[in-house]
Image (cartoon, rainbow, N blue to C red; front, side, top):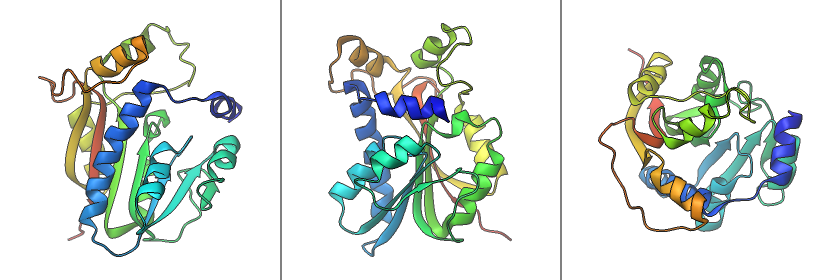
Length: 227
């Protein structure tokens, strides 16, 4: 965990990342809206810097926000804004069954060699009518090319990418019903240009001709009904 502790100590959000954070926020908030007006419990798993859970806390008054990460530094930093911050492995959390109305993660699941224990735990702590939203790297993007150019020396160690069909199959096989799948940034072109020129702009390209051809794929799922 020292590697991730060091990463979060030095982390700063680029303009391209800020744009991606806002794109994720739109999706998360659209599903928070579907849960009604009553107070909801929401958690970011593998929160890191916690950009998205902070946005939710600052912009919604009907949400109890939680954060979880296994980096001491990440939890120490986010705990200043999100008091319900927990240091824990995402595959064995300290929460009771059926606790959360909405669970989300970004940049987490791809670091797990076996996603099944993680998905099993998320299913356990998600309410029956709740949503799980996960953002992961897509297989066909400039980001993947960037990683390949490091010839195995990628600084975050093991990381995989996903196709649209593979991601959907993974969730279905692990007890979820997939509600919707979305792509963010076709082939990573917009984020690539933003990073290159350190700027933010309205997206040039909005749709990919390949359903998996995005920088990030997003899956929105619910616990599958047992028959």
